[in-house]
Length: 308
Image 1: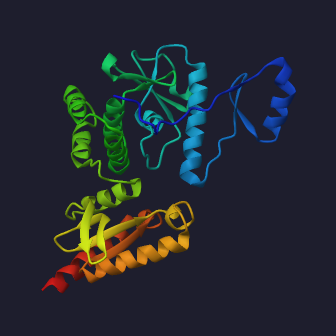
Image 2 (image 1 turned 90 degrees about the vertical axis):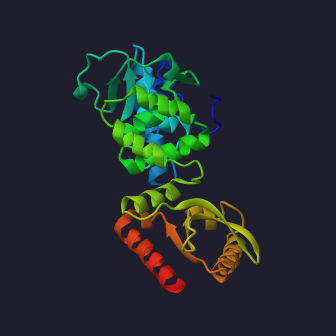
Image 3 (image 1 turned 180 degrees about the vertical axis):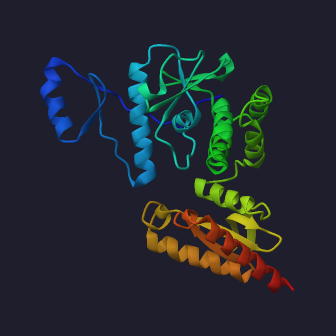
């Protein structure tokens, strides 16, 4: 497949040299760089928000692994998902590496690295900027087998948006029959939907399904007197729509905040006049799935009562 434009860059290393020794040492004491292995340093990871900082930390750890491994390897699982530019949810700190043979390395000797070993086919090997990674499809299956279903679905939805080959996903699953996590992986991939436009939308879908509610339809078009609008998620039979609001939407990252708020109010008024119940969900709401599901159940109940 063609390389997606969303792939993440592993930061370059700052190497120790006699001429730079004093400067590197000053930067280390000032907390501006971190040593990832003897003689190899990186700028201290930064990022806005916990998730971005965690991504920066993992990418820095990846550089450390790349610098010290000498045997054949491929970055894999959620580490590869990050490098491919997939969405992640509650990204772990470990760097995942797949190798062709069982490495004779004690886990406690390299606690920041999780090693997997398997007969990785050539088809499932890829390269991103000179860094070996598992293919996008193999990465999705590995994540679907090993992560919590919510996190696995976040990866799978985004991978489909990036162009993952569904037939190849099915083939890799068939080849993995009998292995740990394959049943879960099949269930996750059956739910994956390229129409999801954010990890938040994916998580709302998952929490609803996990609670036994009917599937939410992503990106449903609705006609109103003001024109046609798309709802992030919906139960069209009840005219219940959900909108997932990211922080950037109203903080200037997508144009004038006041203008966007006014446009959203006009849009929501038109949808309500067309008989729709609209719920707004934020990242904060996802911290309490039980309460969120309670709101979804209440919205469905009120919509049914209104339709009588």
